[in-house]
Image (spheres, rainbow, N blue to C red):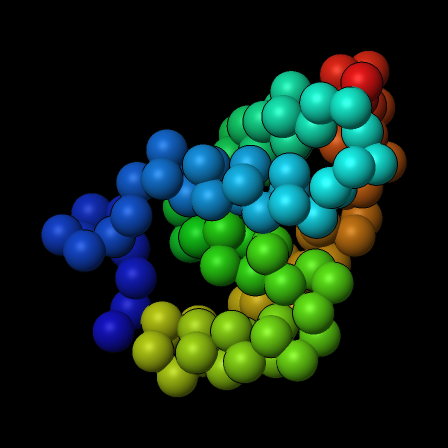
Length: 112
C-alpha cells in the first residue's frame, strides 16, 4: 500500500500534527514547565516544510526519538506496508537533523 494524502485511510495532517505534539510533550516531560506551545510550533513548522508523505513519516517515527529499537520496527513497517524506500526515510531523518537549528530558532522562544 502506497500512502498518499488522497487515499481514504490516510490520516489528515491535523491528526498527524496532534500525534507529533503528543509525542513531543511526552519526550520533553518535565524539562519544560509547559512544553505544549513549543511542541505545537515544531509540529506546525514541520507540516509547513514537508509534503504529505514526508510529514507522515515524521508523524510515525517522532515518538521513537528516544527508542532506537522502536524506531527500527516502525521504519520496517513503513518500508513493508507504507510503500516507502529506506532512502525516503533516511532523507526525512536527515532533514530533521539538518533543520534542528532552524526549528529551534522558530519555536524555541515558546519554551517555558
